[in-house]
Amino acid sequence: MSGMVQLATAGDVAEAEELQEMLRNAGIDSTIEQAPEDDAVNLLVPEAERETAQEVIEALTEPDDLIAEP
Image (cartoon, rainbow, N blue to C red; front, side, top):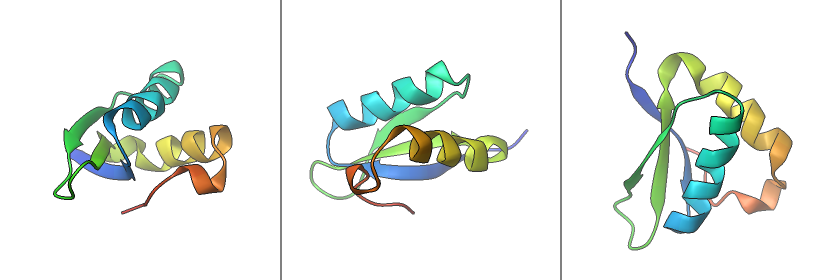
């Protein structure tokens, strides 16, 4: 079984939960965790689904919406 890998870093919990909901609707499990930066939140997905998850996020968001990619 593969581990979880960072997909993106959101500016806050609300943004991370929005991305998490997009992934959930696409059938991809994810989790969020506090990033080392003050208010930032990391979005983690299973390593085996990282590429698909990235495609889902890119398809459903504007390029400027994501704060950072790992």
